[in-house]
Image (cartoon, rainbow, N blue to C red; front, side, top):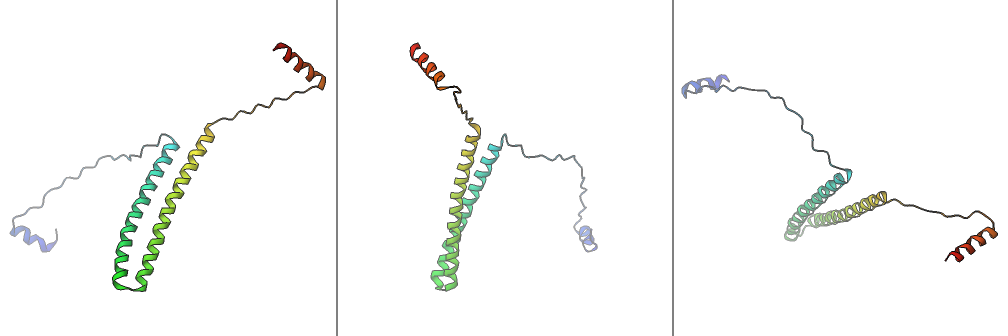
Length: 142
């Protein structure tokens, strides 16, 4: 201990507690891997969306406070700040819409990747006479 406090320890009859330090092996625990990239995308989307909503809420609170200050002071700079906060909140709302559009595009992209398209091109190679015989035989079979 410091020299200045040794005398106080004696006066108050305090002994320094013995602290035992034990070391344990610590393993680094990794976040569980998402089951698929789709889950990772969904988690990122939900996280980003929640953050945008938090920013909008805080921006609205700040806007209300700044508007009160601007109205009470009638100072041009205060109104300028209110205008900037309005623009910032509108930009965040626009980013929310962009996020929705991006998520929709990702879902659409996954659907197009998952679907398989089969194109069958039937082509008759032969003379006109052979084609007429083929068609005549089909009519006779019916």
